[in-house]
Length: 80
Image 1 (cartoon, rainbow, N blue to C red):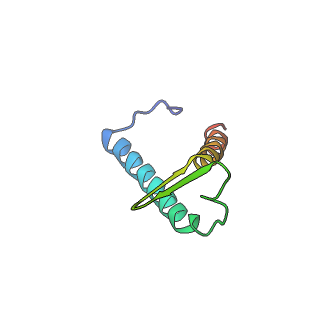
Image 2: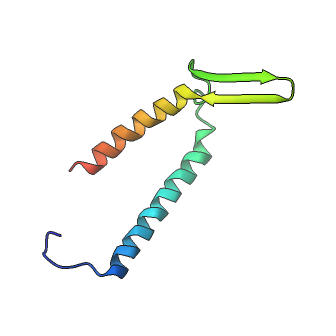
């Protein structure tokens, strides 16, 4: 810590719970808004296999794109 003080266990738990709450809110918003983004799930590297009684969808390109974007955003947020 910068101030040289100590953090009580309750404060640490509180910060963790607030962080988890923020993560849940962000994921919830992305789930609500994500289906309105027209190209997600329809990129050239997304595979869809349909057989009789079976449908398999592997969004490989979408996962890679989301991973790169999240990596860039988190790196910008973490670095000060």
